Amino acid sequence: MGITKILTASTAIVMALNSAAWAEELTISAWGGFFEETLAAEIYPGFTAETGIEVRSIAQPEDSTWMTQLMAAARAGQAPADLSLVVDEVLLRGNEVGLWAELDPAAMPGTESLLDGYVKLNGDGNAFAVGALAFYTTFVTNTDFDADAPASWAELWEPKWDGKLGIVTTPNSGLLEVTAKTFFGGVDVLQTRDGIEQVIAKIAELKPQVSLWYRDEGQFQQSLESGELNAGLYYHDVTMLSVWDGLPVASTFPAEGGIVSDAYWVVPRDSEHIEAAEKFLDYMSRPEAQALMARMMGVTPIVPRDSMDLTDEEFAAVGSDIEPIRVQTEIHLREGDWLETKYQEMIAQ
Amino acid sequence: MGAARMMRMPSYGSRLISGLAFGVMAVFFVVPLIFMIVVSFYQPDPMGFYKVDFVWENYAKFFSSFYYTVSLRSLYSSALGAVLVVAFAFPLVLFVSDLSRSHQQFWIISLLSLMCLSEVIIGFAWLILMSQSAGIPGFLEWIGLWDNPRSLSPSFGAMMIGLVFLGFSIVALILYPSVSRRDRSIEEAAVTLGTPPRLVFFKILLPTFRASLVPVTLTMFVYMLGVFVMPTMLGRPKDWTMTVIISDKALGDANLPLGAALAVVMLIVTVLVLIASAVLTRRRTP
Image (cartoon, rainbow over the protein chains, first blue to last red):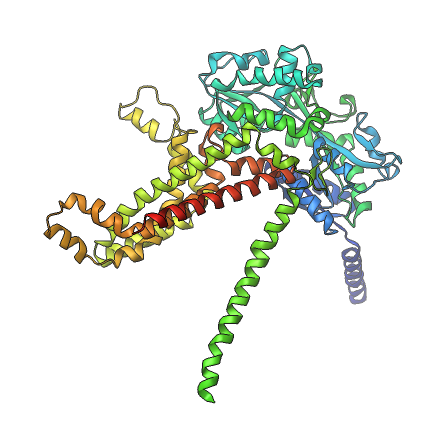
C-alpha cells in the first residue's frame, strides 16, 4: 500500500518534471483590448489543452507602430512575439524586408480548410503568413438619433446627421473604396492618381458634417454611445458587443457592402518556436476554431460556411451575404506617401 | 601641502561632474539627434521600410504647401499658448505670494499635484467637461442659458484651454520663488510717489520680472510645440500641429525618413525663433 503510494507519487513527480521540462511556451501578440483579452481567455486555452503548449498573450499597439517595433527588434536579432496578428499591409511590407519566418505548409494540414488565398506562399512554396480572421467596418449609427438603418453608404453624405459624423483619419479605413463603389461605379477609379483625387474630393464634401476625425477608437465608440456623434465608420464586431449590451447603437451593412479587412498570423524571423507556431496555426485554421472565434469575438470566419456549425443567426451577426468592399492594399502601398499626404491635406486644410 | 591639495580637489570634482554631464548629454541627446539626422536622408520605401541612401527628397517635401502651412500653424498656436499661460499664471503667482504662509503652501501643493496628472488624463477630463451631454454645455442647457447645446470640442479654443492647463502649474512653480522673494518696498515706493495702485502691475511688476517672464514664455513655447495629445484630442484637424503630422508619418505610415526630416526642420525653425527672440529681448534691455 505504502509502496504503491510512493510509486504513484514519484511517477507523478517525474511526469510533472518531464512535462515541465518539455512544456513549450508561445508568446502571441494581438491588438490590445478586446481582441487580445478574448483570444487569451476563450481561444488559446483550447490550443493549450490539445498540445500542451502554453500561450503567453501580449497586447500589441496599432499596426504600423507595431511593425516599426518588430523591425527594430529584428535588427537586434530578437522576436518580441512568436506569433503576431497583423493586417495585410503590415504583412506585405514586412515580407518585402524579410521580417517573417518561413513556415512549412505540410506541417499545418489544418490550413487546407481555409478559403483560397489565405495561406501566403513565397517563391519557394513556403508560407510566410496564414489567414487568422476577417473583420468588417460598417456604417454605424446612434439609434436614439435615427432608428432607421441606412440603406446606402450615400446617406453618409446627406446633411441629416446634424454635423455629428465620426470618420477615421487614416486613408486605409476603407472610405476611399466605399466612395469609389458608391459614386464612381467601383474601385477601378482608384487605379490612377486622377481618379484618387476625384474620390478624395468627394470625401472632402463630408467635412462640414464631420465633427470628429478620430484616431483613437475608444473616443469614437464612447462618443457614438453617448450621442455626441450620430453616425460614422466603425468596426462591426465591437459595435455588435455594444448592441448586445443594450446601448443605443446599430451596425448596418449598406447595399454596397461592408468594408472587409483580413488579419493574418505571422511569425517574426527570429522566433525560436517555429514548430510550435506551426502547430498553433494548424489549430487556429480548423473550422471549429474559426466558429469559436466568430461566436466569442464577432469576427468573420475565413473557412467555407458549410464547414462550420454556425447557425444562420450566428452567421448573420458576424457578416453579411452582400459582397464586401475590400480595402485595396496594393494601391495604398503603391501610392504610399503621396496618397497619405493628399488625404491628410484634405482633412487638415 | 594640505592646503594645496584642498584647493585642487574641487577642480577634479568639477571636471568629473562636467565630464559626466557631457557624457549624459552625448548619450541621451546628441546620439539620438545624429541618428535622426542620418535617417532623414534615407530613402523611404513604401513597400518595405527604408533604404540606406543619401537623398534630399524628404526635405524637399517639407516645402510643399501643406507642411509649410502646418508648421506656421504650430508656431502660432504654441506662441499664443505660451503667452496665454504666462499671462494667466503670473498674476496668480503674485496673488499667492501675498497670502499667508499656510495658504501659500496649499497653493503650491495644489499646483504640484496638477503636475502629476498625465496629458491624456487632462485631455480626457476636458473632453468630458466640454461634451454636450455631460459637460459645461449640458449644464448651461440645464440652467436655461443655452437652448441647443453643442459639444465645445474639438475646437481651437478647446485645444488652447488644454495647452494652457498643461503648462499652467509649470510656469507658476518656475515663477514662484523669485516672485515671493521680491522687494516689496519698490511697489510701496511707487504708490507713495503717486503711481495709481492699478497701474503698479504694468509699470513696476511687469518690467521688474521681464527677465524671468521672457525665458519662461520661450520655454513654454518650445514645450507646447512638442505637445501631441491636446491637438489630437481637443483640436480639429485644422489645429493639428507638426508634432501630430510627424508622428503620423513616422509611426502611422512607418515612414521614418520623412518623419525625421520634418522633425529636423522643426528643430531648426525652433532654434531660429529662440535665437531671434533672445537677440531681440537683449537689445531692448537697457
